[in-house]
Image (cartoon, rainbow, N blue to C red; front, side, top):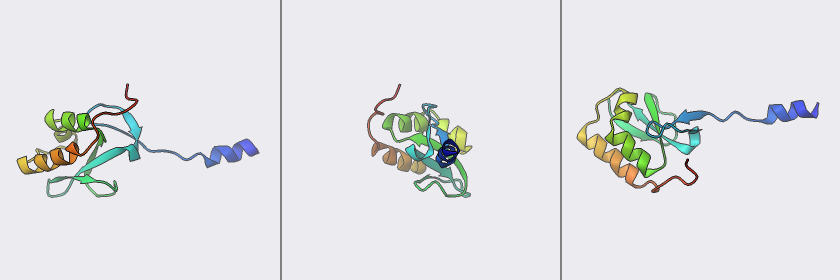
Length: 103
């Protein structure tokens, strides 16, 4: 009976994949980017905005790969405007340099 109660107390942790490095992590460890109805891509820190979304690690390298290689554009099915790309690059520069414990 005790083991059944322990099984019920384990909570499911949503998993998402980083667009750039393809690592699967807990949803809360990643930053969600969302394409709004107007076609503008913005950071969604709460993860609740409506629109097509993609996830990036909180690591500068992943932001550079995701924005430079067109991976983010492919996932969100949008062509980033120059000012929109610059805004996302600025946000990515605030990220830490590398991911500790990354394989």
